[in-house]
Length: 238
Image (cartoon, rainbow, N blue to C red):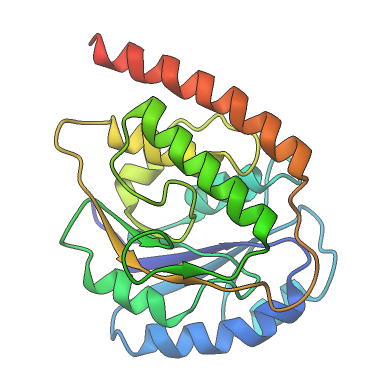
C-alpha cells in the first residue's frame, strides 16, 4: 500500500488547548528533525470546548473532531481512521509524554512490529500519583498473567505501530481500556508478531484535570480482561 506520509503522530485531546499550545511547536521541531513526510492529528471532542482548533491551525496540525462520542476510545478510533502514515505514533496531549521520545521510537521502527515507550523496563519511570501507579501496576500484572503478554508496560498508550496493522483492527472497547485491546489484538494477530520496549519517563500533566473516572476505569478493565481472555482462547483454537 502507498502511504502519503511516513509517520502520523496522533494525539487524543479533551480540553487540552493550553497543553497543546506548549506541546505542538516542540513536537513539530522534533519531527522536522527526522526529515520525513509526517502529519500530526489532534482528535478533539465532537464540538470544540476550548481553543484547540485555533491552536492546531496556528501550528499546521490536522484537527479532527472525534466521531461517536466523548470517550477516549472515540478519539483513538477517529485518529486511526484519519491516519495516513506508514507508521503511527499515539501520544498524550497533556504533556505527560516527552516529544523527543517520538524520535527514539522512530529509530526503532524496524526492530519490531510494535515499539512501546515503557515506564516499566530498565531506565523507565513515572511521576503519576501513588494511586494511579498502584492501579497501573495491578492492570499490567493481571493482563500479563491472564493473557500471556511478555511486555512489561501493557497500559502505556505511547507506542509506535505499523499503520496498516493498526487500521485493520476491529476495536470494541469503550474507554481507556482500548489501549490494552489494541495490544492484545495485535499480539495475537499473527504468528511471530514482535514487540520491543524502550525506556521512557511518564510525567505529570502540565495543566488541567485528568479525564479518568477511577471507578469506571476499574470496572471497564474487568470487563475488558474477560472479553480479551475469551478472544485469546478463540484465536488459539484457529
